[in-house]
Image (tube, rainbow, N blue to C red; front, side, top):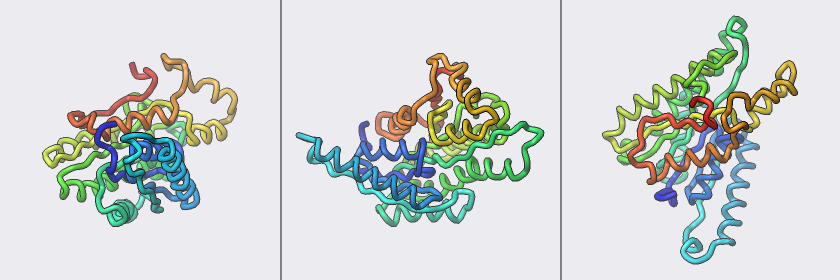
Amino acid sequence: MKGLAGKVALVTGGSSGLGEASAMRLAAERCDVMVAGRDEARLRAVVAALRGAAAAGAQQSSGADAAKTPGRFDCVTGDVRRVADCRRIVDATVERFGRLDVLVHCAGVWVEKPSLETTEADWDVVVDTCLKGAFFTDQAALRHMVAQHSGVIVNIASDSGHHGEPGAAPYAAAKAGVIMMSRTLARDHGPDNVRVVCVSPGIIDTPMLARAIAESDDPEAYAAVQAEGYPLGRVGRPEEVAAAVAFLASDEATFIDGVSLLVDGGYCA
């Protein structure tokens, strides 16, 4: 993708799933990448994978690509449900790499329960992680991006923010909030040369999906219906979402702002 090499990217929720895939793709685009999450051991494993992939890519490069410097990679722990951690994660990235050009906010949590059984604790953990965390991480990143008059924020929303999601009212509400929040921030900070966009995936083959299947009353039946309603006849792959993230963060998308790009196999068509 044009314009990503040498950029500094922060990926929250970077220890697995869509966050890990986004970090890997940005690293392949020669970005410096900070991955953030709550599990230090898993974050360090991702950093090791990023470095290994970069080293392998450098060995295989030839010609003009061989002269490009591979990215630098690091990790920082934090819980985006805490505003102080949102700020600390962003500040640690700027301190480590000198600036922040791309924020990919992937941190999220899924709780599936009938609405009449959903508790205040269920609501709080989902909304605080998916919506509150997104806003205050974006806010912390914007302070740096506005000052440097450049930057891109890619928030991971969901197709659940575009349609009703049976048995997941807090999640659908939070993701719809992320979409509208991102549109508002795009209008607020377009004049500062900062773009804010969303990627809204459908069901993707991630550890979050694997946990939902394992915790269901009938895992085999639950797994069997995941691709229902998808015109492409399957669930998505993390790297397909990561490709959309990289595109929106790149100079290929410099006139795309405030959108929610559905990566859902046609489910919402």
